[in-house]
Length: 244
Image 1 (cartoon, one colour):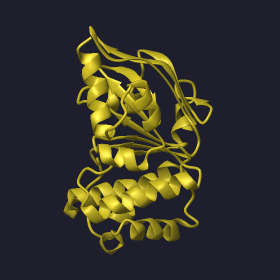
Image 2 (cartoon, rainbow, N blue to C red):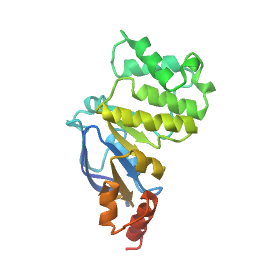
Image 3 (tube, rainbow, N blue to C red):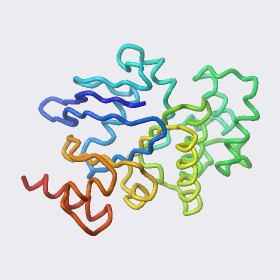
Image 4 (cartoon, rainbow, N blue to C red):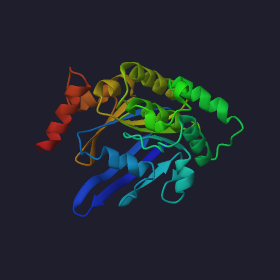
C-alpha cells in the first residue's frame, strides 16, 4: 500500500529526512514515532503529496506520487495535526465540499455525510458554522471528511490532539475497525501508549533517519531489551543514536 524509496528532504544545509526506505502493507496500522523535529511531519507531507521530496520516490497503492499526484491522492484520507478548515462553511457544507473535491458523486451524499457526522458525535452541529466549533469538534470534522471517499489509506498526524477521553476511545476503536476491513493506517503520534495498544508495527525516526522498524517484540529483541514498554524502548533507541 505504501512504498517509500530513499525518501529525502533537504533544506539548504539541513537534512530534514534522509534516505527512508519503508513498505507498509494493506490493512496494517503502522505507528510512526520520534522526538520533536525528527522528520515525522515532513515525511507525512511528502507521502501525501503536499511537499516535493529532494530525492526518492513515494508510491501509494502502486501509483507514483510524482508521476500521477491526483490519482495517488485519491487513495489517501489525510488527517493533519492542525485542522485547517473553511470556517465560514457549516459542517455539512464542508462535507459536501470534500465530496466534490474527491469527485464521489452526490447521489448518496446526505446518507454518507449524516452517518459519518453521527459517528463522530457532531451531527447535531452539522448546520452550525465551523468557526463556532471547539478544537476537538474541528478535529472530528476533519476525520469525518477524510473518510468520506472511503480511502484505502488513512494518513494521520497526531490523531488525539484536542480530543476528550470519549473521543480518544472512539478513535482507537475506529482505527482498529478500519484496519480489519482492509484500510491501511499510517499514524504519527507522541501518544506512545496508543501506538503500543493499536499499531501492528512501529517505525522510529530520529534526526531524519528511520532507525528501527518492527513489532514491539522485534524492536525489543533488536535493542537487547527484555522488559519495559514502548516508552522505555523509545528512549533507549533514540538516546543511543543521539550519543553515537
